[in-house]
Amino acid sequence: MTALPQAELLERMRAGEIGALARIISIVENERPGFEPLLRGLYALPARSNAIGFTGPPGAGKSTLINAVIRCLRQRGKTVGIIAVDPSSPITGGAILGDRIRMGEHVKDDGVFARSLGSRGHLGGVSRATRRIVDLLRRSCLDVVIVETVGTGQSEVEIAKIADVKLVVNAPGLGDDIQAIKAGILEIADIMVVNKSDLPAAASTKRHLEMMLMLRAANRDVPVLATSPLRNEGIEALVDTAESLLASRIPLDSASNRADIRNMIAEHVANTARRRLGLDGDPALAAQIDALCDAFAVGELGMNEITARALRLLA
Ligand SMILES: Nc1nc2c(ncn2[C@@H]2O[C@H](COP(=O)(O)OP(=O)(O)OP(=O)(O)O)[C@@H](O)[C@H]2O)c(=O)[nH]1
Ligand SMILES: [Mg+2]
Image (cartoon, rainbow, N blue to C red; front, side, top):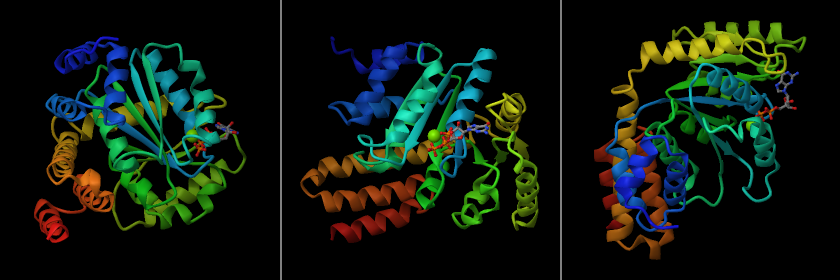
């Protein structure tokens, strides 16, 4: 394969060439030579699509639901990118295999681009890798970007900050477990989903969640929707709700791009530090700088604070 100039690669990706998109992802994901200028070129492009995040406890039916949502979006003529962040090892993890199998029906569809990300073995950690690839897909030729994360802990809540609209997927029975609330997952929901609504406990779980949402301090209207991908019920309504939320609340050129600018700065600072300070020879220091940049990217620390802390680290 001949190496294409980066500008041409980006142009081909924008024009809808899935092969170019796959090559850019692989260069960025594996930090191959030339990934930095490629990332810079990428962040210079305006985002074209929003990201919808699906999070929730293991086994809630996220992958099955996403599959049904993709089918619905395809029927509406939309192209879709999907990133599944898998909590298990990329090598031994059975869940990746499971996701691949369930994505099976879309494998031959040129309008669907699917990728699994293992949480281990990623330079800069899974949040950075996921952010990069989501930002990348949002600038490609795809109309909608979907991210699946298993929501069980704080890091997943962090990952959910990447998405413009967050769906928290619950299954009957699981909703009664306050584990989800402890992890702060309820707080990030824009739409609450009771999946597997074909099961008998679905109605009581829905009432339970509505009650919990009413009791929350933050006075936001969070719709609770029932879906059953198994029976193909509630999917159209879910897609309609997500699309109208995106259209009403999140103009592509403002809110979502502000997060992208933070990502771009964090990428730039981490990459420059790595190069200038020779951080590849000092993995422990590199990890600390990376962590600071990640905290900036998700809005936990401001620019002044990360600068002060970085200077202390390097003193
Ligand atoms: N009854 C019923 N079962 C469902 C439905 N959707 C999914 N399931 C089942 O729920 C199980 C888990 O589904 P997944 O889609 O893998 O769930 P997940 O949330 O992606 O799981 P992880 O990625 O491992 O966290 C599977 O056995 C599905 O067949 C549904 O609408 N009704
Ligand atoms: Mg899954």
